[in-house]
Structure formats: structure tokens, C-alpha cells
Image (cartoon, rainbow, N blue to C red; front, side):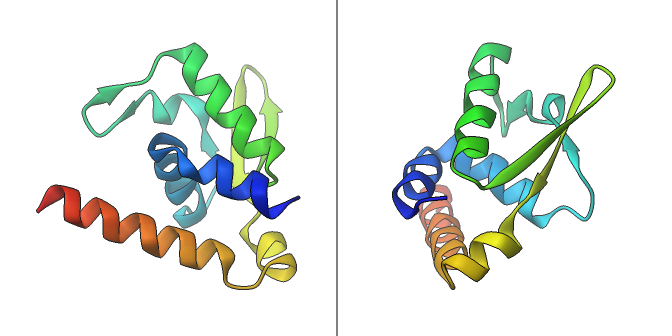
Length: 102
């Protein structure tokens, strides 16, 4: 888990949206739940790459259950290693989203 990998992973707005959703969820989320972000359809191959990047950055954990991959946040682990980093990134992302919608 390296800060530059986390920053790279969350620099993409689609990955940031996926991670924000997973981090805010009370249970694991399956990959197919993210087949569209907003009104944008995300191709399966692109979605796989986004999840791989988030996994390799140490932001999520993925576990196979039958044919589904269930994803959970590793926010607590990241917070212990880099206090405040995730909160700062997600806050900045939310602010930029609000400006884009205004």
C-alpha cells in the first residue's frame, strides 16, 4: 500500500465513484452493481480494470463467491497507515462533483 498508488487509483473519476460507493456501503458490493455510473454505461472490461487498480492500490478487498466478486473497503487499514488521506481525497472529489453539477 503506497500513497502514490492510492492517489493514482482515485485520480480517475469512475474509480473514485466506485470506491466512494464501496466505502459508504454497510456490506460488500458486487462488481455488476457498477455496470453504470450515473448515466454512463461501463463496459465489463473497463470495470474489471478499474477494480484491479483499486485492489492493487490496497483500497478494496475482493472475494469470489460463486460467479460473483464481492468487494469491501479497506478504509480502516488505509486510515491506520495514512491518517486522513482517504477522507481528504473523498472530500475533494465530492466538492468537485458538486461544482460540475452546479
